[in-house]
Image 1: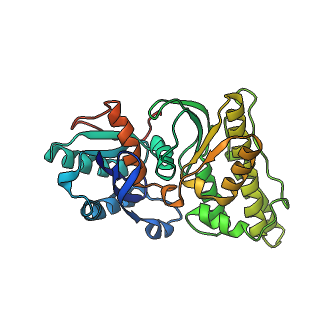
Image 2 (image 1 turned 120 degrees about the vertical axis):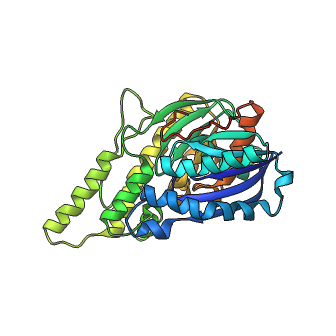
Length: 331
């Protein structure tokens, strides 16, 4: 089954054709990073307009290896995300599906991130525990099946990716923050500065990143007030170490408590090599099989949406022409 998939939940416009939820036949993505770098973050109105400018051309490119005649269904991210950006993808996908009498499959963005791992590990099957870490989401979930998820833990304030962006901006490293922080941290000492690790007694799997973000900003401000040099690399390394400690400890605890032998790392922050290394090391100690997607499937992309769409279709989860987009949507 060939599924034409669309992803436009934030600032990447992406179109792909995925076969049977496992094989990527084509993937075309246009990033808006250069545009939003000028503003230090994503500007929603600009993002939605930029999606409009490229989605038609990307669709033509993605369909070249397969052809629309050999396409069996259309899938699209419909939630959660920036509402203007989502509406571009949803409207385009609905129109194409209606015009060509193809089934329309709505896909939840977070489930899509997890499904990106199936493209790297076709043998991976639920049940498993997944840590989804991105600019807008930080969740620990238990995937009972390909489509049925249970939330075990989530951030109570900021998403981890947003925290990376904010700290990078304060340090003057630019946007997007994740790669900038990771690059700066390479020459830093992760033990040079202690930043807080927040944990909750009522739910040991929940996260909070607002405190560490404030601690880092206060540290930088104190250096400024004393006219001292800002140790950018040490701050980046220490911040990364603190964040990864919490992500790893909470997630591995969830695996142990739920007797899970498979752990999936997904989302844009899954590209962070320090996080990957720490999680893999802990999984090896606990004899947990660790899975993370290929780097090209870490960020927002339509291939992961096409992968998840296959399993949604098998569960008869299709939509009519009145499908809407939603900025917030439970898993």
